[in-house]
Image 1 (tube, helix red, strand yellow):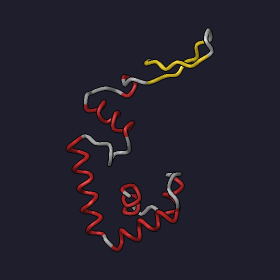
Image 2 (image 1 turned 120 degrees about the vertical axis):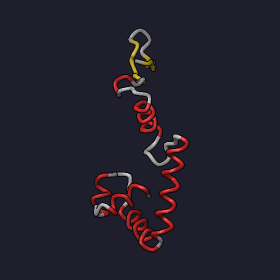
Image 3 (image 1 turned 90 degrees about the vertical axis):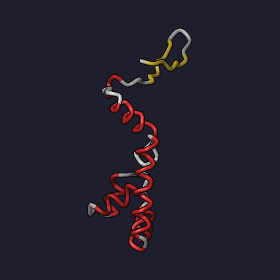
Image 4 (image 1 turned 60 degrees about the vertical axis):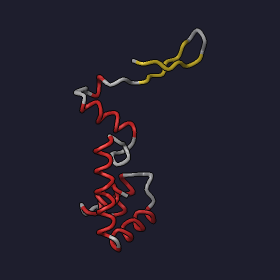
Amino acid sequence: MDIVIAAFDRGVTPEDMCRKYSTLRLADVYAVISYYLQNQSEVREYLALRAKEAEEDGSARAVGGPRQAQRIAGRRAGLRKRDMPVKRERIDPRHDHREISDR
């Protein structure tokens, strides 16, 4: 809901939202916009509360998931993206199975 309403407020069309975010369905975008237009004050209050909670507890709920939360936490700690730990998969030719290792 956060993404759809922010995009709508910027003047992005529902069709363009669906093009940018492939997981969105056009009918759902219109439903969110319809609800928002009928309940603007409640929705804005809800979104402000989510943003405040996410800021206070470092939660990923309003910022795009755990990966983005990890990047944000790294930035706060002064790390660059290339310094963040990355899981890489490599094939061990001796055993012909995959191993997961850190950098």
